[in-house]
Amino acid sequence: MFLFLAAGLMWLCLGTGAWAEEPEPDWLSLLTEAVLNGDRDAGIAAAEGWNAVESRPHLDYDELRLLSKLITWEAGSVWLTDELRLGVGEVVLNRVASPEFPNTLKEVVFQEGQYAGTDTYDFQVALQPTRPCAEAALRLLLGERILAPQVVFEGHAVQGKVHSVFRDMHYGSIYFCESHFPELYAAPEPTLLDLFSGIAKRLAAVAETEMTP
Image 1: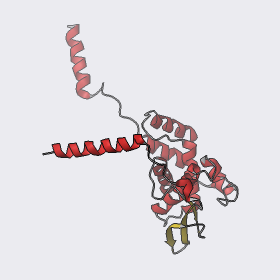
Image 2: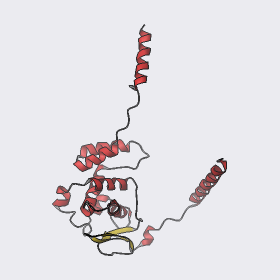
Image 3: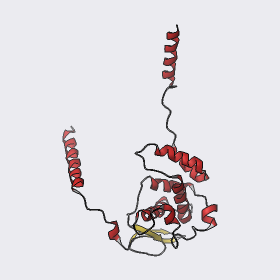
């Protein structure tokens, strides 16, 4: 009798999904909401949940919030486009990756003589990121790019070779310009391993095409 009841209970649990694996929380949504609310504890917890899968791009709450605030500071007006917001944020990340600028996001944002006003109370305390700017920052930290790595200037004045221009009836022209030292951003020469790997991938693609009926 006991075995019969146990078997019935097991069937009921399996049938209703009671023993099914819990769905993973939407860490990115939770992280975004934490950034918008300035909830650091919740943001750190969401980032840790996301980062638990090693294959994912690493996210840091403090970096996401700071980049979200910088994009809001520079391109937070509601009529501006997501493309401009992505461009503004990407220039920051290009600087972080550049040998010409500091190598952390915080140092780039607060570098003297660069982003005006970031040393003020208005930016550091009063400013809250908007949702479109937080979403743009998240897309960038997840790896999305629309510019070239050597684009490290953004502003109303031309500061180097112009890569692209954003024109707005209120703001005027905003220029995205390249470094004065493009050779620092040249792609590295491929190694023999890179060449053999490329050949192997092409041969595999050809073989797969030939096997397709």
